[in-house]
Length: 512
Image (cartoon, rainbow, N blue to C red; front, side, top):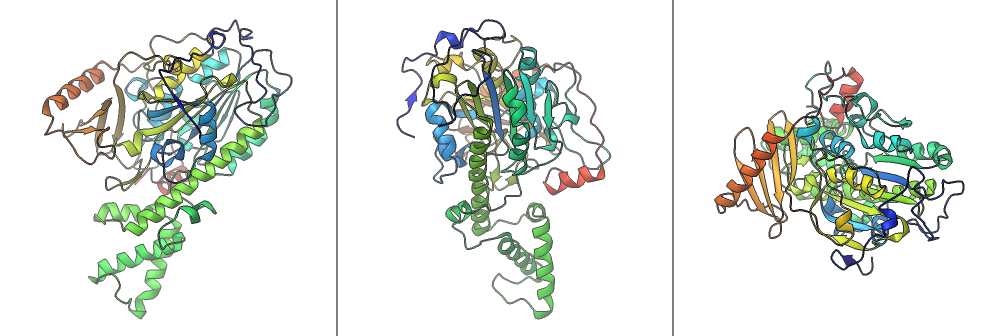
């Protein structure tokens, strides 16, 4: 990536990007021929001085699996190139460990306890579980639509479809289901002409990959995989054998009786058809995963991140994203790969770093701030106020997020804690981050955990008993924030799910 500048070195975004007159944004003069996507010339027929906005969200991408943030695997070479032209936030936090609370926060600039969308599970297909964002809520798309942008959404996650209010403010909105690659890029190609013809546009592009199930993608999986397994056949055969041994009371490595071979094979095929069943079995029976299983799954997950990185480059090139674009790349949450004994995110009621620490990158017109790295902790609730500020639009005072423009200019923000929340069938947890300290509070058991993220980024040493005063102070701040949080509107009732919807949610691990 070359040399990188950190905040505090004294450069500043030119005033032209901060104040733009009317909808024409005539105050911004862009002269560079090279945009954030090398070799893509500016598109003709654009409104003079207009800016486009592209928000790319990669579902389920944890920060430490991205090479732009230090992964030992080369998973995100395109993001690395973008970061050399943009502003990288190394400590960005999702306000929730799964899509529903986090994406509502991305679109509203509010925390889950304020926008009201903290739940989203159901145990039967006669109720959707997930509430609907009401018309009174104002989304990022609505704000930009009101400022003269043509708005486009490519949705690949059922949870962020029209039925739950995510279509608000979009002129064109594609996708109502769980949709993996290559379909997001196919949708981009289908919208490309309309996007190119718009005077200025906002695009939200949401990739569902690398969401579970993790499909190995070559050649990257072969490069990343250090296990002896090469396919889900190998993994599920191993799991079926493990289950067989546990039932028989045998130890691993003993022969399978000839009459039981067909049963083991059938079990392996059933697991391969529905991989989530493996993790349900492990959770229900306290099965400790083999290192080989974890290595295989981690390599497959990493190969999905690499595949999306390549797909993102193709999509942005297809769109002709140029030097008149504000580009934001982030993720809605991370994924646990048995870091703390669990797997996934939705049935995982935790707030550890692997679940809420996510990438966040801004690429600004003119290359302003190119190569800057910001270590100050920030939240995804900051995206809305930052984009509004960059566009010279009014930033509502009642948003929870702050504009990150001062950090981009090498200045500082007022000291503030960050928060994240999760609600599951087992209860509610919330955390407060005053870096390097992080306190997690279980609102059911009223127990807490305290971590020093600087000394212990893996959160392997709970310091709540060693630092009782610090833990108590953070707990009081967290409880005071929660008690003061005000839900801004009456959320809509959950829509009914069809049996087909229910099956999809179950296959992806959202419903037990």
